Amino acid sequence: MRSELAVQVRNAPSRHRLALVHGFTQSAASWGPFVDGLGGTFETIAVDAPGHGRSAAVEAGLVDGAEMMAAAVFEAGSGGPASWIGYSMGGRYALHVAVSHPETVASLVLVSTTAGIDDPDEREARRLSDADIATRIERDGVGSFLAWWLSQPIFSTLPAEAANVESRLGSSPAGLASSLRLAGTGAQQPLWDRLGNIDVPVLVVAGELDAKYRALAHRLVESIGDNAELAVVPDAGHACHLEAPTVFQKLVQQWLTSRRT
Image (cartoon, rainbow, N blue to C red; front, side, top):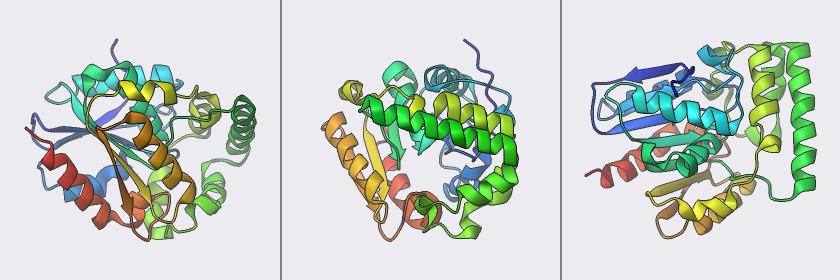
């Protein structure tokens, strides 16, 4: 299928390709500083996820959204498989791509993410919480919602200037609400029992100060197996790629470069 998703392709066509998938409330533009730091060594395809940025009108869950992403990345630029980097929600999308469309994935970098909530009751509670937050977005608008969202404890270590609020304002209330209802963690069927099928190199990244996702990172590595390894970003929290961009850039670029053929 052809994808409805917007993508941003940068740098000269190359067989070394990166697919970049942002977190909730962000957009492809959030990867700008990371791409700038690569110095043109990779062709990058940054995706606007369903409900976000220029894909604000696209309504899709994780399964359908991953299919759209796989098609969009495979067709963009010089085409073909790519190394996928996904942060938080974007990591959950990247995992779905890896297990359902492995032909599009050369390697995988998962940043502050999870393969889902195992317990059905906990998952249902999260789905209801996500639905309440979606209603809040529709009621209050994106600007007011972002002020509340970024004040949550999970972002307590994220400096205001690194959050790049202005770039997040491009999404619509309807788009973000749809994303939470269809692709929030509460709506996700857990993938833990499918992770052993991933046979490409995987780097799992978490911030040292993010205890919850650091524990999930360990579980991801154990579940994927010998082809996965863990990297912890010192003195950083959930948004470790934004809080410590130089450290994150260096560790990811070195890992990717060491796996180029």
